[in-house]
Length: 168
Image (cartoon, rainbow, N blue to C red; front, side):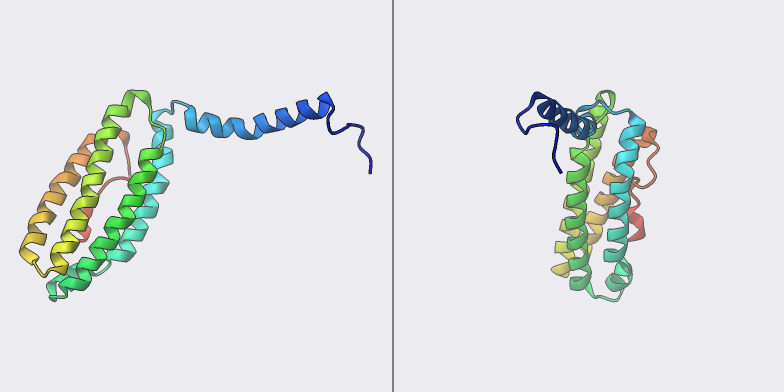
């Protein structure tokens, strides 16, 4: 099988450049473009959904554990949930944001980082068998989550809406 092009011919070089551009252009546009709010929501929702599903599994039955006095195992589960949320926050922070919503989304990401911290601290308090401190932190977590939800209410998030009361 012969080729009518030599490896160093200008036609081969042009073809290689054209293929490279065709393959990389969508990625460059996705990374460097100024997405619309709808495009941002469409990119964020699957990330949030994956985190919700993960934390549903991690935190399933944790209320019951706390009520039964199994504080250390419940605390470990909150720590795991915090770690999972940290990965999600990193993914969300890496998404290109609409320029017009950048300040709002930065504020929201800040609340999500704070949520991660609260989950971690609740887990530590439970592992230390300090149920009162964990409850106090849970109240602060709920306040923080309400602020996060209110910050991006106009985005119409479904999966990215925080509902921590399911677990606390």
